[in-house]
Image 1 (cartoon, each protein chain N blue to C red):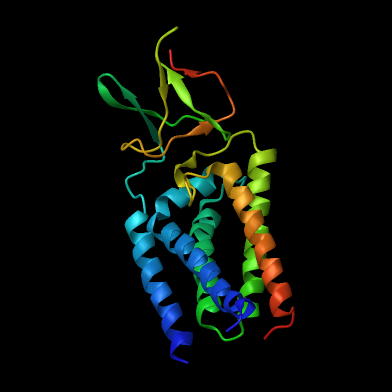
Image 2: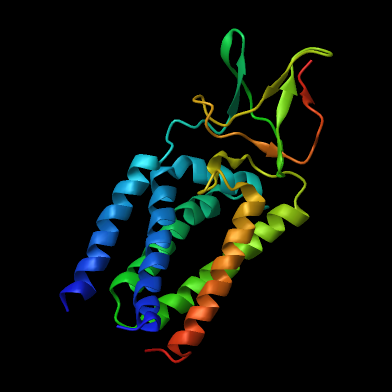
Length: 140
Length: 89
C-alpha cells in the first residue's frame, strides 16, 4: 500500500481517537466541564448550560464513531470540521473578547493552556482540510 | 475486512481506557493550591487568565512568591500574562 493510502486510512482513526478521548473525558469530568461553561460563556441559564455540558461530549462521541466505523469517512470529517469551527469560535471569543478566562484545570489538554488549545485546534482544522483535499471533497 | 472493524474497535477500547484513567475527578473548580514550607495549602480560585508565565501569589508584602496549581498534587500549573504575583494580603 502506498504512503497516501496509509495516510487516508489512518488519519480518520487518529482524529476519531482524539474526538472520542475529549468527549469521554468531558463526560467523566462532567461537573468540571459544566463549571467551565458556566464561567466562560455569557449564558446564565442553568438548563442550557446543563444541556451543553451533556450535548457537546455526545456530539464529539458521535463524530468519533462516525469517523471510526461509518464507511463514508468524509461525513465524519465534515462533522469534525464543523465541531472545530464552533470550538475555535468559542476559544477566540474566550481569549480575545472576555475579561476573565476560567482556570486551565478544566481544559482537555491541561499542559497546553488556552492559547495552546487554540493553536492545536487551528492546526487540526488545517489538517482536516488537507485530508479532505486528499480524499476528494465528495461524500464517499 | 477484519482490519476495517478491528482497528477502530481497538481504538475505541484503548481510548476509553485512556480517558477514564486520565480523568481528573479530584480537581475542585473552586480552589487552587500552592506549595509552602508548611506543605500544600488550599487557596480560593485565582483568575490568572492565560499566557506563558507561571501564575504566582504572595501571602505577605515582599514575601515569597508561590506558584499556583490547579490540583492538590501540584501537577497542573496555572499560566498568566501578568509578571507580577497576585497579592493575597
